[in-house]
Amino acid sequence: MQQIWTGINNVVKRVFDIVASGLALVVLSPVMLVCAIWIKRDSEGPVIFRQDRLTKDGRVFKMLKFRSMVQDAEKHGTGLFNYEGDPRVTRSGRFLRDHSLDELPQLVNILKGDMSVVGPRPCVVYELGDYATLNARFKKRFSVNAGLTGYAQVQGRNELPWDEKADLDNRYIDLYRKWGFALDVYIILKTVADVFRHKDIYENKIDDGLSDRESAEMAQARVIEMAHERD
Image (cartoon, rainbow, N blue to C red; front, side):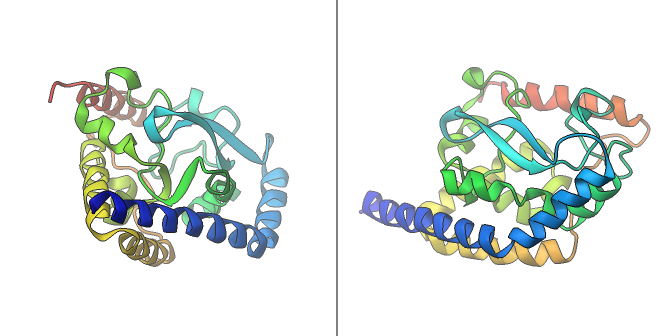
């Protein structure tokens, strides 16, 4: 019975992903065009930022975003970590991030099936270290497709440390088995409310006494260590 229930909800979820992403791409195409023109005029570099991310079962895909930082930003400064006042963020990029418009190109990823509207946020391929040796706690979050938004995002978004994100992502997987697509509807509505309030956009430093770079390096090392600890 559980398999039938989950199967029905998965079909509904995929149909919703296709319809919602397709309609959103059509309706929001003027907004996306304006964003693209602004990015191109504001700073050097491509309009679309492509990055290798992990989705279900550790599969690698190219996630799309509007570029909100200077070119090759992840190779400089705080790397994958983005604290408030990050000098790598462009003028247009700050506005796009504040209103979550930088995420709009991921509608293409959803339409292709690389992502869902709701699911654990896709991490960068090296963010958690070697996928093959992740512990069960961290690997569980990869048992479903990555999402544009997720349970962890509506509980705290970027302000949450990685261990809490992993636990909340796993909680989503367990709750989805019980509540199905109704849980996704709740998360989508909560996400819309959070976007309008510009909530939890930037990450918190692990120690205010450290420089941004030192904090980012320490946080990255801790994340990888946690993701490979024995359960």
